[in-house]
Length: 104
Image (cartoon, rainbow, N blue to C red; front, side, top):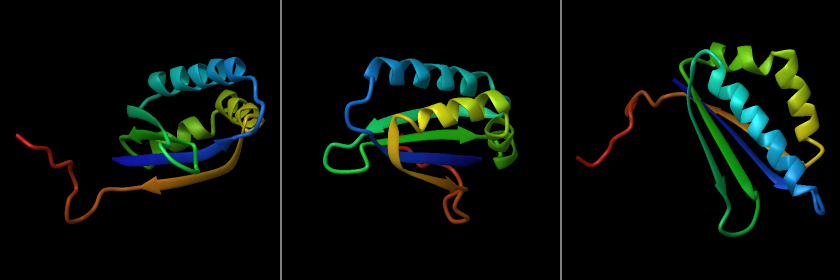
């Protein structure tokens, strides 16, 4: 299982409705992609980056298949009109704690 985390700030003065529409379309593509497990989005309570979006996949190959899809690449290019300071992080399981630990 891998997690792909995007962090970014918004470009000042963006059309928030257009951004929301684009985000919903990208999320729908993820939901229907093979290997997709989970999606989380957070807004910063203080400072920058303003947003962190994390998707969880069965494998890096599954995420890469979506990332290489021409329609998804088109959405990604449009997305960059609304955001700045984009950072992408890819995370795999820890050898010491490979699964989440939850209180019973």
